[in-house]
Length: 421
Image 1 (spheres, rainbow, N blue to C red):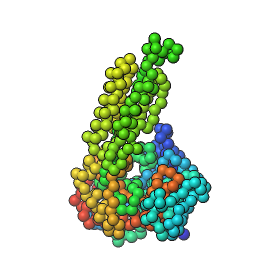
Image 2: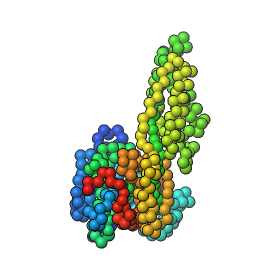
Image 3: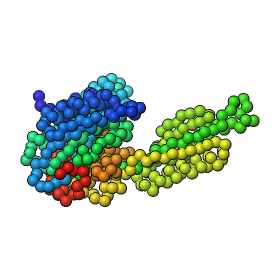
């Protein structure tokens, strides 16, 4: 039986590809290799050119141009790993022509997809909705994107009458742990513009993300025997950490107080003892000045702690993580404008949504490869209530088909950066 978008997706989600942030390797988990090798074999069977799986788990392939024009090379990317939630033993369930009633997942009846709680489900009435069984995630993030791109390769190779320029495809590991394109060689990829398929809503196009920094605050107190703490001058590092966190909480700096275009300062972890404490933060803002202000406020609080208790030692280290890809994309909006046009040509209304997070496209754009993000149709990611409608994945596929044709029609003047032509 020939493959379809759905059969591909069902096959891919049953391979456990959960990434592991504690692993020093790339990919970070053996299951990712399993899926990548399967995709490699499938790409060769489809007739794709230049199929290559490198030592870091970057699988690339080419669909040659069908146009005689001298066109830029376009790339599409999807990540094969899944998030930090059980991904072994995924049992996908297809709720064909879903009637709109709440979906109770059989392996954990407490898990219920109710359209009253998740309003976006109401758009899926009558569609074929795919869920997991209740004890695992589904893996639509980003195996929906993987299945869409594999089907796009098949469709374009089967229809050479569709005019397009040279196309590159990349399936990468470890996006969920922030290492998705860390070791991707852009000269090897050889693209001048790119798109990730890692968005949610049908018609969604993302060209802005957070800018992000990480911060580590280290507080060293004065350790003494607690029986003689007062005369020996104990300074409890935990108390100082609590004071810092209390101020941030009073200022409503955390993500629980933010939405829309608001940024946040988020404590992600704390460990230590009365003698020494380490606090780990992520700082996020759409605006670089806003991000800098968050770092400055944290620095001010640390300086205040140090001044109030000079016997302690308070240190702060801030490390850049990624930057809002809009800072670069707004200089040449053609990749975004072409995507919006493709969405309309596919029969959808564009939804331009700033990403309250980062994407692989954030790093790629910062490195010189403009990479907006397109939708793949998945929802409720990173948990047992994840779902996707087959028809929404098909809409993403149509959008990509329209997109390559728009680039063929109007992309000839786009600047070349990494293409090998």
